[in-house]
Image (cartoon, rainbow, N blue to C red):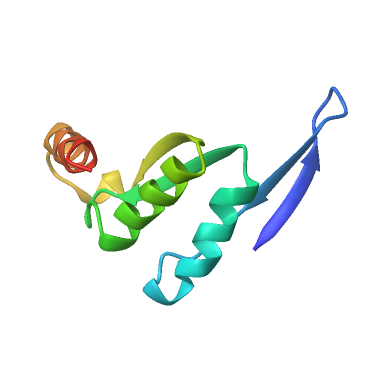
Length: 93
């Protein structure tokens, strides 16, 4: 889905949420092309998936800045280990 909000300064901020399922590859690529910043959401319990790697590539090819958000961290006993594992997985890409 997508939605837009107006900031206090009057600027418009549009958020485009693309599904992680493999079938939505072309939607993620188009999203990377039209955004200013890509926010990549990675589940701590799943780690980096093939779609994550694909989204990183799309953002890099579009010259976009990439922000990574780690979710589902509450499902992990050793949070620091999960953070380090995901960071290492991302660094490998």
